[in-house]
Amino acid sequence: MAESSYATTMASNPIAVIGSQYCAANQVDLVISRKVKTLRYGEFVVSDMNGNFIFKVKGIAFGWHDKRVILDAADKPLITLKQKILSNHSRWNIYRGENTDDKEALFTVKTTSIFQWKTKLAVFLANNNSKEKNCDYLIKGSWSERSCVIYAGDSSTIVAQMHKKITGKSLLIGKDNFMVTVYPNVDQAFIVSLIVILDAINAAATAGASGAGAGGGAAAAAISC
Image (tube, rainbow, N blue to C red; front, top):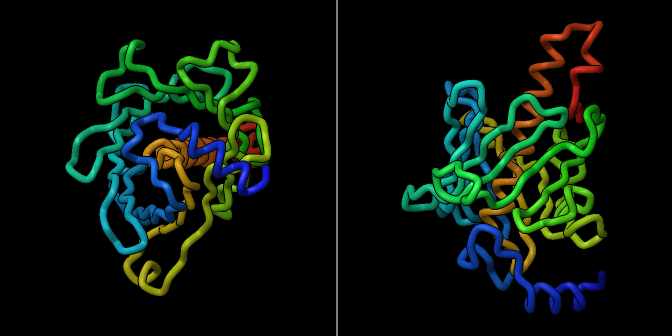
Protein backbone atom coordinates (compact mmCIF):
# COMPACT_ATOMS: atom_id res chain seq x y z
CA MET A 1 0.00 0.00 0.00
CA ALA A 2 1.37 3.41 -0.92
CA GLU A 3 2.25 5.75 1.94
CA SER A 4 -0.46 8.29 1.03
CA SER A 5 -3.06 5.51 0.78
CA TYR A 6 -1.98 4.13 4.16
CA ALA A 7 -2.17 7.58 5.78
CA THR A 8 -5.67 8.16 4.40
CA THR A 9 -6.90 4.74 5.52
CA MET A 10 -5.45 5.01 9.04
CA ALA A 11 -6.66 8.58 9.51
CA SER A 12 -10.24 7.54 8.79
CA ASN A 13 -9.99 4.13 10.50
CA PRO A 14 -7.46 4.31 13.34
CA ILE A 15 -6.52 1.06 15.05
CA ALA A 16 -7.76 1.57 18.62
CA VAL A 17 -8.04 -1.89 20.19
CA ILE A 18 -7.20 -0.83 23.77
CA GLY A 19 -8.07 2.86 23.50
CA SER A 20 -7.95 5.78 21.08
CA GLN A 21 -5.84 7.74 23.60
CA TYR A 22 -2.93 5.44 22.69
CA CYS A 23 -3.08 6.38 19.00
CA ALA A 24 -0.84 9.20 17.77
CA ALA A 25 -1.12 11.14 14.52
CA ASN A 26 2.59 10.65 13.91
CA GLN A 27 4.89 7.63 13.90
CA VAL A 28 6.13 6.78 17.40
CA ASP A 29 9.26 4.90 18.48
CA LEU A 30 8.98 3.02 21.79
CA VAL A 31 11.84 1.51 23.77
CA ILE A 32 11.05 -1.71 25.62
CA SER A 33 13.54 -2.59 28.34
CA ARG A 34 13.96 -5.69 30.45
CA LYS A 35 16.67 -6.39 32.98
CA VAL A 36 18.60 -9.42 31.80
CA LYS A 37 19.01 -10.73 35.34
CA THR A 38 15.62 -10.51 36.99
CA LEU A 39 13.72 -12.72 39.42
CA ARG A 40 10.46 -12.46 37.51
CA TYR A 41 10.47 -13.16 33.80
CA GLY A 42 8.18 -11.19 31.49
CA GLU A 43 8.53 -7.81 33.20
CA PHE A 44 9.23 -4.77 31.02
CA VAL A 45 9.28 -1.00 31.09
CA VAL A 46 8.11 0.86 27.98
CA SER A 47 9.23 4.45 27.36
CA ASP A 48 9.46 6.94 24.52
CA MET A 49 12.73 8.09 22.95
CA ASN A 50 13.07 10.82 25.59
CA GLY A 51 12.92 8.30 28.43
CA ASN A 52 9.38 9.16 29.48
CA PHE A 53 7.63 6.18 31.06
CA ILE A 54 4.50 5.06 29.15
CA PHE A 55 3.67 1.47 30.10
CA LYS A 56 4.82 -1.20 32.51
CA VAL A 57 4.44 -4.95 32.13
CA LYS A 58 4.13 -7.20 35.18
CA GLY A 59 4.60 -10.97 35.12
CA ILE A 60 2.22 -12.77 37.49
CA ALA A 61 2.13 -16.42 38.56
CA PHE A 62 -1.39 -17.76 38.06
CA GLY A 63 -1.64 -21.49 38.70
CA TRP A 64 -0.87 -23.41 35.53
CA HIS A 65 -1.37 -20.30 33.42
CA ASP A 66 1.24 -17.77 32.41
CA LYS A 67 -0.10 -14.26 32.88
CA ARG A 68 0.95 -10.65 32.21
CA VAL A 69 -0.67 -7.35 33.13
CA ILE A 70 0.05 -4.13 31.23
CA LEU A 71 -0.28 -0.93 33.27
CA ASP A 72 -0.30 2.71 32.20
CA ALA A 73 1.96 5.47 33.52
CA ALA A 74 -0.26 5.83 36.62
CA ASP A 75 0.01 2.08 37.39
CA LYS A 76 -3.60 1.50 36.31
CA PRO A 77 -4.11 -2.00 34.82
CA LEU A 78 -5.10 -1.67 31.17
CA ILE A 79 -5.23 -5.26 29.99
CA THR A 80 -4.51 -8.78 31.18
CA LEU A 81 -2.75 -11.32 28.97
CA LYS A 82 -3.52 -14.91 29.88
CA GLN A 83 -2.08 -18.05 28.35
CA LYS A 84 -4.53 -20.76 27.38
CA ILE A 85 -3.40 -24.22 28.43
CA LEU A 86 -4.21 -27.55 26.77
CA SER A 87 -4.16 -25.99 23.30
CA ASN A 88 -2.51 -27.44 20.19
CA HIS A 89 -1.26 -23.98 19.30
CA SER A 90 0.42 -21.54 21.66
CA ARG A 91 -2.54 -19.31 22.46
CA TRP A 92 -3.05 -16.20 24.57
CA ASN A 93 -6.32 -14.47 25.41
CA ILE A 94 -6.36 -10.75 26.20
CA TYR A 95 -8.92 -9.03 28.44
CA ARG A 96 -9.67 -5.46 29.43
CA GLY A 97 -8.47 -4.49 32.91
CA GLU A 98 -7.78 -7.32 35.35
CA ASN A 99 -11.03 -9.18 34.73
CA THR A 100 -10.63 -12.38 32.69
CA ASP A 101 -14.34 -12.99 32.06
CA ASP A 102 -15.26 -13.71 28.45
CA LYS A 103 -17.31 -10.51 28.27
CA GLU A 104 -14.08 -8.53 28.76
CA ALA A 105 -12.21 -10.35 25.98
CA LEU A 106 -10.50 -8.06 23.46
CA PHE A 107 -8.54 -10.38 21.20
CA THR A 108 -6.69 -13.68 20.89
CA VAL A 109 -3.16 -14.39 19.66
CA LYS A 110 -1.98 -17.82 18.53
CA THR A 111 0.75 -19.47 16.48
CA THR A 112 -0.36 -20.23 12.92
CA SER A 113 0.96 -23.79 13.13
CA ILE A 114 2.05 -26.21 15.83
CA PHE A 115 5.71 -26.21 14.73
CA GLN A 116 7.43 -23.11 13.42
CA TRP A 117 10.99 -22.26 12.46
CA LYS A 118 10.17 -18.60 11.99
CA THR A 119 7.77 -16.53 14.08
CA LYS A 120 4.26 -16.30 12.67
CA LEU A 121 1.40 -15.35 14.96
CA ALA A 122 -2.20 -14.60 14.04
CA VAL A 123 -4.30 -12.03 15.93
CA PHE A 124 -8.10 -12.29 16.06
CA LEU A 125 -10.19 -9.48 17.53
CA ALA A 126 -13.18 -10.36 19.70
CA ASN A 127 -15.64 -9.31 16.97
CA ASN A 128 -13.97 -11.50 14.32
CA ASN A 129 -16.63 -13.95 13.10
CA SER A 130 -14.46 -15.91 10.66
CA LYS A 131 -13.95 -18.81 13.11
CA GLU A 132 -10.23 -17.97 13.04
CA LYS A 133 -9.96 -18.40 9.28
CA ASN A 134 -9.12 -14.75 8.55
CA CYS A 135 -6.86 -12.97 11.03
CA ASP A 136 -7.08 -9.26 11.80
CA TYR A 137 -3.31 -8.90 12.24
CA LEU A 138 -0.31 -11.06 11.48
CA ILE A 139 3.14 -11.05 13.12
CA LYS A 140 6.14 -12.33 11.15
CA GLY A 141 9.87 -12.28 11.74
CA SER A 142 12.78 -13.52 13.81
CA TRP A 143 12.60 -13.09 17.56
CA SER A 144 16.25 -13.99 18.12
CA GLU A 145 17.22 -11.01 15.96
CA ARG A 146 14.50 -8.83 17.50
CA SER A 147 13.25 -8.23 13.96
CA CYS A 148 9.49 -8.68 13.63
CA VAL A 149 6.82 -6.94 11.57
CA ILE A 150 3.12 -6.61 12.39
CA TYR A 151 0.76 -6.48 9.40
CA ALA A 152 -2.89 -5.55 9.03
CA GLY A 153 -4.45 -8.94 8.29
CA ASP A 154 -2.75 -11.16 5.75
CA SER A 155 -1.62 -8.17 3.71
CA SER A 156 1.52 -6.14 3.05
CA THR A 157 0.28 -3.18 5.12
CA ILE A 158 2.67 -2.68 8.05
CA VAL A 159 1.28 -1.21 11.29
CA ALA A 160 4.39 -1.67 13.48
CA GLN A 161 7.83 -3.25 13.49
CA MET A 162 10.40 -4.22 16.08
CA HIS A 163 14.20 -4.12 15.93
CA LYS A 164 17.03 -4.55 18.38
CA LYS A 165 18.32 -1.50 20.25
CA ILE A 166 21.79 -1.97 21.73
CA THR A 167 23.71 0.82 23.41
CA GLY A 168 26.85 0.89 25.53
CA LYS A 169 24.74 1.99 28.47
CA SER A 170 22.25 -0.88 28.06
CA LEU A 171 25.08 -3.41 28.06
CA LEU A 172 26.68 -1.78 31.10
CA ILE A 173 23.53 -1.86 33.23
CA GLY A 174 22.50 -5.32 32.05
CA LYS A 175 19.33 -4.52 30.16
CA ASP A 176 17.79 -6.17 27.14
CA ASN A 177 16.50 -3.27 25.04
CA PHE A 178 14.62 -3.30 21.77
CA MET A 179 12.70 -0.69 19.84
CA VAL A 180 9.22 -0.83 18.37
CA THR A 181 8.16 1.62 15.67
CA VAL A 182 4.40 2.17 15.79
CA TYR A 183 2.88 3.67 12.67
CA PRO A 184 0.48 6.67 12.76
CA ASN A 185 -2.99 6.12 14.22
CA VAL A 186 -2.13 2.68 15.58
CA ASP A 187 -2.82 1.77 19.22
CA GLN A 188 0.55 1.71 21.03
CA ALA A 189 -0.78 -0.32 23.99
CA PHE A 190 -2.09 -2.93 21.55
CA ILE A 191 1.27 -3.21 19.79
CA VAL A 192 3.13 -3.50 23.10
CA SER A 193 0.82 -6.35 24.15
CA LEU A 194 1.64 -8.23 20.92
CA ILE A 195 5.37 -7.86 21.54
CA VAL A 196 4.96 -9.11 25.13
CA ILE A 197 3.07 -12.19 23.91
CA LEU A 198 5.68 -12.79 21.24
CA ASP A 199 8.36 -12.75 23.94
CA ALA A 200 6.35 -15.14 26.16
CA ILE A 201 5.75 -17.67 23.38
CA ASN A 202 9.41 -17.59 22.39
CA ALA A 203 10.51 -18.04 26.02
CA ALA A 204 8.23 -21.06 26.44
CA ALA A 205 9.47 -22.63 23.20
CA THR A 206 13.11 -22.04 24.14
CA ALA A 207 12.56 -23.61 27.56
CA GLY A 208 10.81 -26.56 25.94
CA ALA A 209 13.62 -27.07 23.46
CA SER A 210 16.22 -26.97 26.22
CA GLY A 211 14.29 -29.49 28.30
CA ALA A 212 13.74 -31.85 25.39
CA GLY A 213 17.44 -32.30 24.73
CA ALA A 214 19.07 -33.11 21.44
CA GLY A 215 16.57 -35.85 20.55
CA GLY A 216 13.43 -33.75 20.91
CA GLY A 217 14.75 -30.23 20.52
CA ALA A 218 13.40 -29.74 17.02
CA ALA A 219 9.92 -30.87 17.94
CA ALA A 220 9.84 -28.68 21.01
CA ALA A 221 10.93 -25.51 19.25
CA ALA A 222 7.50 -24.17 18.39
CA ILE A 223 8.93 -20.70 17.90
CA SER A 224 12.57 -21.43 17.27
CA CYS A 225 13.54 -18.18 15.60
